[in-house]
Amino acid sequence: MTAVIFNDWYENYFYPTVKRYCKKENLNFNILLLIDNAPSHSSLLLKSDENIRIIFLPPNTTSLIQPMDQGIISSFKRRYLRNTIRLLIDKLNDTESVNENLVHNFWKGFNTKNGIDNISKAWDEVTVSTMKNGWKPLSFMNEYPTEHEVFNLNKEIMFLAEKAGLSNFGESDIQHFINTNEEPLSTQDLIDILEKNVDENSSDE
Image (cartoon, rainbow, N blue to C red):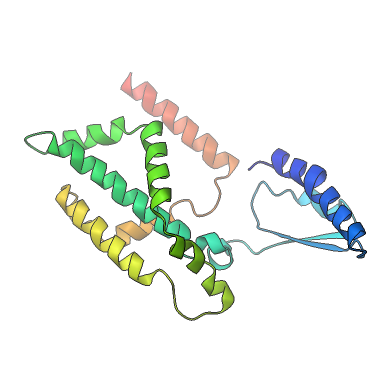
Protein backbone atom coordinates (compact mmCIF):
# COMPACT_ATOMS: atom_id res chain seq x y z
CA MET A 1 0.00 0.00 0.00
CA THR A 2 1.20 3.50 -0.83
CA ALA A 3 -0.27 6.95 -0.17
CA VAL A 4 -1.04 7.34 -3.88
CA ILE A 5 -2.98 4.06 -4.06
CA PHE A 6 -4.78 4.78 -0.80
CA ASN A 7 -5.80 8.29 -1.89
CA ASP A 8 -7.02 6.89 -5.20
CA TRP A 9 -9.13 4.29 -3.34
CA TYR A 10 -10.54 6.94 -1.00
CA GLU A 11 -11.45 9.47 -3.69
CA ASN A 12 -12.58 7.18 -6.52
CA TYR A 13 -14.10 4.25 -4.67
CA PHE A 14 -14.81 4.83 -0.99
CA TYR A 15 -16.21 8.37 -1.20
CA PRO A 16 -18.64 7.86 -4.14
CA THR A 17 -19.69 4.43 -2.87
CA VAL A 18 -20.71 5.55 0.62
CA LYS A 19 -22.39 8.66 -0.78
CA ARG A 20 -24.41 6.53 -3.20
CA TYR A 21 -25.30 4.09 -0.42
CA CYS A 22 -26.56 6.85 1.90
CA LYS A 23 -28.69 8.32 -0.88
CA LYS A 24 -30.14 4.92 -1.77
CA GLU A 25 -30.98 4.08 1.88
CA ASN A 26 -32.23 7.61 2.58
CA LEU A 27 -29.59 8.16 5.25
CA ASN A 28 -27.80 11.34 6.25
CA PHE A 29 -24.37 11.53 4.65
CA ASN A 30 -22.40 11.28 7.90
CA ILE A 31 -19.58 8.76 7.75
CA LEU A 32 -17.04 7.52 10.28
CA LEU A 33 -13.98 5.87 8.71
CA LEU A 34 -11.65 3.94 11.02
CA ILE A 35 -8.21 3.20 9.57
CA ASP A 36 -4.98 1.93 11.06
CA ASN A 37 -2.07 4.22 11.67
CA ALA A 38 0.04 3.22 8.64
CA PRO A 39 2.39 5.63 6.81
CA SER A 40 0.43 5.12 3.58
CA HIS A 41 -2.82 6.38 5.16
CA SER A 42 -2.48 10.06 4.48
CA SER A 43 -3.52 12.55 7.17
CA LEU A 44 -4.36 15.00 4.35
CA LEU A 45 -7.70 13.19 4.02
CA LEU A 46 -8.78 14.47 7.42
CA LYS A 47 -10.02 17.73 5.88
CA SER A 48 -11.37 16.26 2.65
CA ASP A 49 -15.09 16.43 3.56
CA GLU A 50 -16.90 17.74 6.63
CA ASN A 51 -19.39 14.85 6.39
CA ILE A 52 -16.68 12.20 6.65
CA ARG A 53 -14.84 11.86 9.92
CA ILE A 54 -11.61 9.88 9.81
CA ILE A 55 -10.14 8.42 12.99
CA PHE A 56 -6.73 6.76 13.04
CA LEU A 57 -6.44 3.78 15.36
CA PRO A 58 -3.67 3.95 17.98
CA PRO A 59 -0.26 2.68 16.79
CA ASN A 60 0.84 -0.91 17.54
CA THR A 61 -2.69 -2.23 18.04
CA THR A 62 -3.04 -4.17 14.78
CA SER A 63 -2.38 -7.54 16.39
CA LEU A 64 -5.03 -6.86 19.05
CA ILE A 65 -7.98 -5.75 16.94
CA GLN A 66 -7.74 -7.17 13.42
CA PRO A 67 -9.13 -10.68 12.77
CA MET A 68 -6.27 -11.76 10.48
CA ASP A 69 -3.88 -11.23 13.38
CA GLN A 70 -5.93 -13.33 15.79
CA GLY A 71 -3.82 -16.43 15.20
CA ILE A 72 -4.30 -16.64 11.42
CA ILE A 73 -1.11 -14.87 10.32
CA SER A 74 0.94 -16.58 13.05
CA SER A 75 -0.42 -19.96 11.92
CA PHE A 76 0.60 -19.16 8.34
CA LYS A 77 4.07 -17.99 9.42
CA ARG A 78 4.66 -21.13 11.49
CA ARG A 79 3.76 -23.29 8.49
CA TYR A 80 6.05 -21.20 6.28
CA LEU A 81 8.93 -21.63 8.75
CA ARG A 82 8.31 -25.37 9.08
CA ASN A 83 8.25 -25.83 5.28
CA THR A 84 11.46 -23.80 4.89
CA ILE A 85 13.27 -26.01 7.38
CA ARG A 86 11.93 -29.07 5.55
CA LEU A 87 13.48 -27.73 2.33
CA LEU A 88 16.78 -27.31 4.18
CA ILE A 89 16.60 -30.90 5.43
CA ASP A 90 15.87 -32.19 1.91
CA LYS A 91 18.92 -30.30 0.65
CA LEU A 92 21.13 -31.69 3.42
CA ASN A 93 19.85 -35.23 2.81
CA ASP A 94 21.29 -35.04 -0.70
CA THR A 95 24.80 -34.82 0.74
CA GLU A 96 26.84 -37.26 2.81
CA SER A 97 28.07 -34.77 5.41
CA VAL A 98 26.52 -31.64 6.89
CA ASN A 99 28.62 -28.51 7.33
CA GLU A 100 28.08 -24.79 7.80
CA ASN A 101 28.99 -24.09 4.18
CA LEU A 102 26.12 -26.25 2.91
CA VAL A 103 23.62 -24.47 5.15
CA HIS A 104 25.02 -21.09 4.09
CA ASN A 105 24.73 -22.04 0.41
CA PHE A 106 21.13 -23.16 0.96
CA TRP A 107 20.15 -19.74 2.36
CA LYS A 108 22.14 -17.94 -0.30
CA GLY A 109 20.36 -19.91 -3.03
CA PHE A 110 16.90 -19.41 -1.48
CA ASN A 111 15.39 -17.05 -4.06
CA THR A 112 12.15 -15.13 -4.57
CA LYS A 113 10.50 -18.02 -6.44
CA ASN A 114 11.31 -20.41 -3.57
CA GLY A 115 9.73 -17.91 -1.18
CA ILE A 116 6.59 -17.49 -3.30
CA ASP A 117 6.19 -21.27 -3.72
CA ASN A 118 6.57 -21.64 0.04
CA ILE A 119 4.04 -18.87 0.71
CA SER A 120 1.50 -20.58 -1.57
CA LYS A 121 2.02 -23.97 0.10
CA ALA A 122 1.86 -22.54 3.64
CA TRP A 123 -1.30 -20.56 2.88
CA ASP A 124 -3.01 -23.65 1.41
CA GLU A 125 -2.25 -25.48 4.66
CA VAL A 126 -4.02 -22.92 6.86
CA THR A 127 -7.22 -24.68 7.91
CA VAL A 128 -10.79 -23.43 7.57
CA SER A 129 -11.25 -23.77 11.33
CA THR A 130 -8.25 -21.47 11.91
CA MET A 131 -9.82 -18.87 9.61
CA LYS A 132 -13.20 -19.11 11.40
CA ASN A 133 -11.66 -19.12 14.87
CA GLY A 134 -9.73 -15.95 14.06
CA TRP A 135 -12.92 -14.01 14.73
CA LYS A 136 -13.63 -15.53 18.13
CA PRO A 137 -11.51 -13.14 20.25
CA LEU A 138 -13.42 -10.27 18.68
CA SER A 139 -16.67 -11.93 19.73
CA PHE A 140 -15.58 -11.90 23.37
CA MET A 141 -15.18 -15.69 23.50
CA ASN A 142 -12.70 -16.76 26.14
CA GLU A 143 -11.17 -19.79 24.43
CA TYR A 144 -8.07 -18.98 22.39
CA PRO A 145 -8.73 -20.89 19.17
CA THR A 146 -5.28 -21.91 17.98
CA GLU A 147 -3.49 -22.81 21.22
CA HIS A 148 -3.40 -26.55 20.44
CA GLU A 149 -2.36 -25.88 16.84
CA VAL A 150 0.40 -23.49 17.94
CA PHE A 151 1.76 -26.08 20.40
CA ASN A 152 1.85 -28.82 17.73
CA LEU A 153 3.41 -26.59 15.06
CA ASN A 154 6.06 -25.29 17.47
CA LYS A 155 6.90 -28.85 18.51
CA GLU A 156 7.24 -29.95 14.87
CA ILE A 157 9.35 -26.89 13.93
CA MET A 158 11.77 -27.47 16.83
CA PHE A 159 12.04 -31.18 15.95
CA LEU A 160 12.82 -30.34 12.31
CA ALA A 161 15.26 -27.60 13.33
CA GLU A 162 17.19 -30.07 15.49
CA LYS A 163 17.17 -32.57 12.61
CA ALA A 164 18.60 -29.86 10.34
CA GLY A 165 21.42 -29.20 12.78
CA LEU A 166 20.02 -25.91 14.09
CA SER A 167 20.91 -26.48 17.73
CA ASN A 168 19.19 -24.51 20.51
CA PHE A 169 16.38 -23.43 18.17
CA GLY A 170 13.50 -22.88 20.59
CA GLU A 171 10.09 -21.27 20.97
CA SER A 172 11.64 -17.82 21.47
CA ASP A 173 13.26 -18.11 18.01
CA ILE A 174 9.92 -19.10 16.49
CA GLN A 175 8.20 -16.17 18.20
CA HIS A 176 10.90 -13.79 16.96
CA PHE A 177 10.22 -14.99 13.41
CA ILE A 178 6.44 -14.57 13.90
CA ASN A 179 6.85 -11.01 15.23
CA THR A 180 9.22 -9.85 12.49
CA ASN A 181 7.82 -6.91 10.48
CA GLU A 182 4.43 -6.84 12.22
CA GLU A 183 4.19 -3.15 11.36
CA PRO A 184 4.41 -2.04 7.70
CA LEU A 185 7.86 -1.14 6.43
CA SER A 186 8.43 2.59 6.12
CA THR A 187 10.00 4.21 3.06
CA GLN A 188 13.26 4.55 5.00
CA ASP A 189 13.17 0.82 5.89
CA LEU A 190 12.89 -0.05 2.19
CA ILE A 191 15.74 2.33 1.31
CA ASP A 192 17.94 0.78 4.04
CA ILE A 193 17.21 -2.73 2.72
CA LEU A 194 18.03 -1.66 -0.83
CA GLU A 195 21.31 -0.01 0.25
CA LYS A 196 22.26 -3.09 2.29
CA ASN A 197 21.69 -5.34 -0.75
CA VAL A 198 23.81 -3.05 -2.93
CA ASP A 199 26.63 -3.13 -0.35
CA GLU A 200 26.45 -6.95 -0.12
CA ASN A 201 26.56 -7.34 -3.91
CA SER A 202 29.59 -5.03 -4.08
CA SER A 203 31.34 -7.11 -1.40
CA ASP A 204 30.63 -10.33 -3.29
CA GLU A 205 32.10 -8.90 -6.47
